[in-house]
Structures are given as structure tokens and as C-alpha cells.
Image (cartoon, rainbow, N blue to C red; front, top):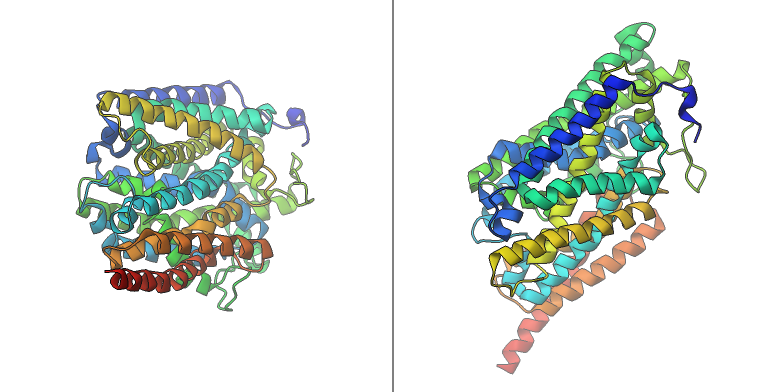
Length: 494
């Protein structure tokens, strides 16, 4: 990467803003952790969090650094076609609000995988938890990696140093405050992220000759504002059917089954509050994503006449890592003071994704895998829950470093999650349809689904929005006959 000495850097006011942000955020997160008595307080916040804070936390978790950095990069390299997937995101959230949320509050559960355990026993629940932990760690690792991009540009830090910096900072307040700290700090960080996006959206046209009209006319003429593609395809590019079918099923997993989001819904006070949180997210996600896609298209217009002052790095395959383009713009083109605020927005997005992953991974490994479940002392159980949070922090650092060569953080993160999402969604759906059954058919179905999805991913002929639907169908087709067979065997033995 080209040296930063030839380009503008942060001045004193920018550094003051950034350092003050870190101090206040971490202090606030630690303060929120006071008064915790047990693992329920640590992982569910005592089920006493207001729905609007949960909604903002969900938005921060799902957008995170992937939105602030990855979404503009997608539009910069392509067009607005990702909005077809976002439509499916919105529809899926509304469906979940009415179909899934009531099941969360019927019993005292810490994750959706407990529903699998109630129907098929603890072994099936543990397999489901392991599936989440593997895919969740891989997906979160990519999210953690993207957080290092701003620090590489600002300080010239190595990838490993940048990753460690963000994970350790996020660990501090997650360790002390648990999900309560994560939700409230995420809510604050979402506001900062969104405000930063709005500023850049309003600011870029002022740097282009002809202003708004020239910016959008050039983007339109070059196809950068293209949106809908009605040609059905399982492969790239994005199309309408990927959104209205594939993305809807994908959201049924990410917001109904994936602990990263489900844990927040479980922390709401009631079914009504859980529904409000998800519906609010469904309404908000479309303007949010459209904002950052427009920023990417506008950046493309701007850099048609302006040179990019910092060379965009290439991965080992020789392809440009366009995820660097937005941080480069912030560093080189934003005014003093505002530059610091924008980097705070990037850091906010980064830390929200890290803290959310840490809390979700720790809660599933503690409650679903049964670590320390036999501990009778609640204070001791709380202590070990925090130790597991620390352990997952170390794991995320390793995984993030290993995923540093990706071309697109968005596509990579969603592809990794998609390997197990269909199997997990199938397991939960079966648990709701079949109140009682043996574990082995579900476990076999989940494993077959995973193996097949890994093979499909290796072929690179199917785009990730279809992964969850395909994995779900594989799970159901393989599991239902086995369940019927096992039920028949039990009858014969009886």
C-alpha cells in the first residue's frame, strides 16, 4: 500500500474526538454492567430492555462495518442491485415478527437452538449450537477483519495489530456489561454510523462539478443506478428472485435463528416488544442500505475525475479490494473535525459487530453446549460466562487474520453464514412442527445439508442469497424420511 505521508492525515481535533469516543463508550459499557447477579442478567439483560433500543442494536449488528465500508464498495464496483436483496430483508423481518417471536417467550430459553433441544433432545441441541458457533465464528471473523481497514490507513498498522486493537476494546465492555452493554452501546453506535452516512451523502456532490444533477446524471448514464434485474439466475449478478425468495428465507435464519439477532429479541420485555423491534428493523433497513449504496455510486462518479491518493491494495488473486475506497475518501477528502467524526462512525460500526459476536458466541457455548451448567453458584456461573467471552475474543482474532485475503467482505461473510443457515433453520422449523422425536435423523440431516453446501460453495456457480433456501430444502428432504423411519421403528419395537 502506498505511504500515507503524501496524503492528508488526522489533525488534533480529529484525534480528540476519536479518543474521547473510545473513553466514553467503554466507560458507559462498564457502568451498564453494574448489578449483574447471574448468567440470565449477563446474556438476556434480565429481559428488561426497551424495544427501541433492541431495534437500534439489531440494526447496528446487521449493518456494522459491512454496511459502512462494504456496501459502498459494492455500488462503487457495480450498481444498486443489492437493493433487490434488501427488499427480501424487509419482508422477512415482518414475517418473523408474527411467526417466530411468540415461540421465544413461551419458555425461558437463551437461544433458538433450545427449541431443537425441547423437541429432539440435548444432543440435537448441541449439534445445532456447534453449527452456529462454526458459521458464526467464520462470519464474524470477516466482519472483524474489515474493522482493520481504517487503522491500516490511519496509522499504517499491520492487519494483526488492528484486529487485536478492536477486539480487545470491544471485549472490555462486553466482559463487564454483557448483552445490556452490547445493546445500549450498539444503539449509540448506530446513530453515529447513520449520521456519518448522511453527512457523506450530502457532502460528496459539493466536490463534483455540477453538483447533485451532474453526479446523478453521470451515475445514471453509466448504469451505476441500475436497480432491478428480473432475469432468474442462481449465480451472479443479484436479481429480483434472489431477493423475494432467497433473501426472505435467509432473513428467516439471520433474524429468527441466528443468535446474533435472536439474543436481542429474547432480551425484550414481551412478545409485543419483540415484534415492534423486528418490524422497525424491516422498515428502516431499506433507506439505510439505499443511503450507503448511493454513497458508493457517488464515490465512483467523484473518482472518475479525481485521482485516488492511496493505492487500493490487491489480494493474492490480483483483484482490487474495493472495501478500502470509502475509508480512503474519508481520510483524504473530509474536513478536519468531521473526519474524526466519520472515523468514529466507522469504529462504531466495527465495535458493534465485534461485541455482538462475542456475546452471542459466549451465550450459545455456555447455555446450549452446557458449559458450567452444573455450577450451582450463580456468581461462579457469571464468572465463567465472562471467561468464555474472553476465549471467543481470542478465536475471533485468529479467524479474522485468516480471512484477510477476501475480495468482498459482504459476499464472503454471507457465504460463510449460508453454509449452515439452512440446516439450522430446518432444525428449528421441524422442532416447531414435530413436538417430539429422536435426535439422530435431525443430526444426520443437518450434517448432510452442511456437507452439500460446502460442495456447492466450492463450485462457485450459486450466489449466496440462495444458500439458506437450498440448505433448508436439503435438510428437510433428508430429515423427514428419516424421522418417519425412526418413528416406525419405535412402533415396531413397542
